[in-house]
Length: 240
Image (cartoon, rainbow, N blue to C red; front, top):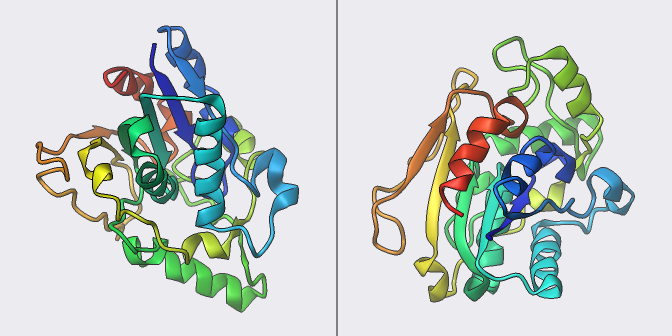
């Protein structure tokens, strides 16, 4: 049995993994889908002080409290920053890092460094007067939809779990200064349906541990856990 710890991205909650969980558990694995501070049923904890460090503490605390080891740590989107810093703190507990259509930082980088378009969202919020609260982006015409979700029923369900994103999450740097983190195996899963002009940072041919990089693709939009849960689960099960 493997422990899959699935970390949701910005604006979302642990509920976003609802369609993936039974597919992994039915294969005999333990699956944990925490909601980070400030989102979903923890939205009442949202404040200007909630940042990347808060979310790293959330995940590290959970792993230590439950005494999880050999964790397959999956980070979607913004949570690529979260899982990187978590692995930096407790590398001996992490078996695999999975960057699911995610930001992949090097030491000291913020979300804006990894994906400069993030600054546009910050500027838009400042102009609108929402300050430290970054609202979710608008729904786009198909095939891009709301975070890549286009089915009307799925869009309606997704809206029920979206919360504002705290500004500090996008400004605090990820930490990858522990040499032990470099030994952890990495897998990248890319969703290929992207708005025109989207630029993804290339994955280096060689992982930090010296082995060839592993990059898989899913022909869907950003929230593949909603649009292609079976296909995503099939890929994740290869790692357990």
